[in-house]
Image 1: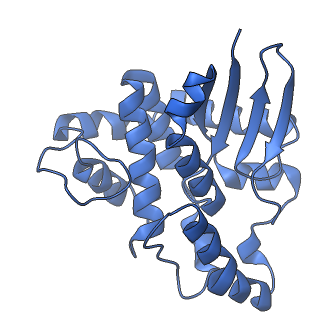
Image 2: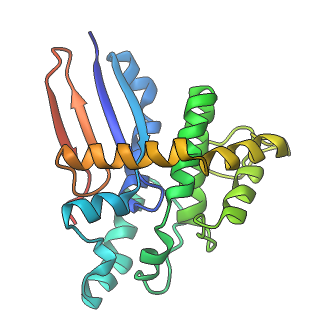
Length: 223
């Protein structure tokens, strides 16, 4: 029996982006050590609501300015995540964080496409949210356009990609239709609640299992 990292993340969570970036670039190394990694889309707002926690952007002005000027930039640089674009006021992230639609779209992609497509889709949505000024992935039209524009191969940068796209127009239509279905709405609610029931109060939340089946949780950012 190998080990496993279950990584619960949301596109609108900055530290989820960093955790994803680190793990996605370590998959081969981890696999050589018989460690499996699985990414789970979770709506962070539901976890915060269940636990009584609040986002770091909801804190004092001094804290927001420190995060924007120093900590977020340092963390991104340390993990070689380039070209981060942050709102002028970090409180805008509170309104931008209604990510149920992209979470559900990712759940559908995970169920119906190969793992590399799922990983690339998660990566591209993180890239779009945190490295471009347009972050309104809660808007169906914006989300559909993001999926339509996704390069056939995406590894963290939009440079050096051809004109081929990951999804056809028909596929995007199917993804958007299914993300709005009761099935995926219920799945996202259940998954978010289950994680809260396990004691999660923020994201990224990692549940790490060793080869003997022992599990322990890790919170990705104590902010």
